[in-house]
Length: 391
Image (cartoon, rainbow, N blue to C red; front, side, top):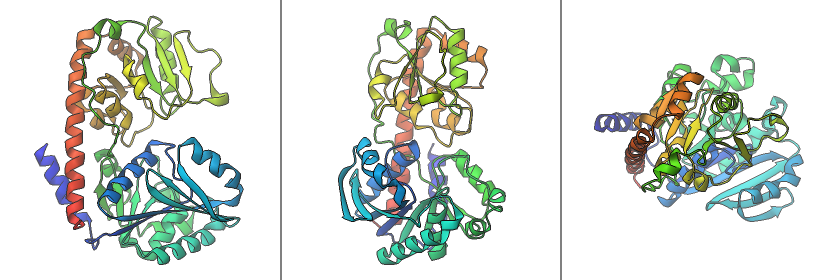
């Protein structure tokens, strides 16, 4: 563990480049900043921590004017406070204390290269007005990233939150993106798996390992009721039932284990299968799944794609909930010895779900240990970053 932290510090120090004094951070986005997914939640948690260091942080958002009618309902859905209109085409809101400014225009579009120049021009104007020391963008927020790179590639950190990003060879089909993306000098990743992936695509770039903070990661150590944990009344929780998260696999697993209960959490809309097994119950998306986890038998995360991190296993382990996940992407690293990571083979998962309750009790303690280890790593990395920035 100590050796790993030493290497993290060495890599972080080497990766800082010419950025040694940071006081103002600007975030550029072509979409609203909410808590709609793990990547945005991780960004908000990181920004909140950096704001607590005394940094000035601002988020600039450029969206198409056709989104005007949806702006306030979407923000209200995610409990955003202090929404107000500065002008007819400019709104301001706070989310977790982070200042966000939204501009709307017929000339804004997140993906159509026909609108690349007006979006870039807008962001460049905002950059020059704010005069940041550091800009944060996301890899797939293309025109925000190209604008920032044109300003100063050495002061742009590009967040890479999943392994499904278009590789440089794929970007060659879009010359106005590819030429600018070749100048990316800094990436942010939250796992060693993503560090390796990004390094293969951008071998000359500096890779900043900034683990996800996960504010909700509070250990809830308690003695769980063994009888309840072993009973069919306690469901196996499966969050976000989509193809890439392994919904078809869990449905097949439920069919093979009719004596077990399963709870699917998330909105399917018209994609919900018509004939789910009788032992599968569904509920809508939850902004907070902590209460569900407390009453769960365990968490299932049979991701089909390569997870770049996987925060749900850590949240579950912190509450004493056993975790069974696929061995895809960063999940084996994130879960560590606190859970079970398996290939996506039904017999292996049937055997794992049917283990003796004593095995689960052992995993609960290992899960607590894994969470404590992760929290120490997060604290060490961000303490080092704060010191490097002389804060």
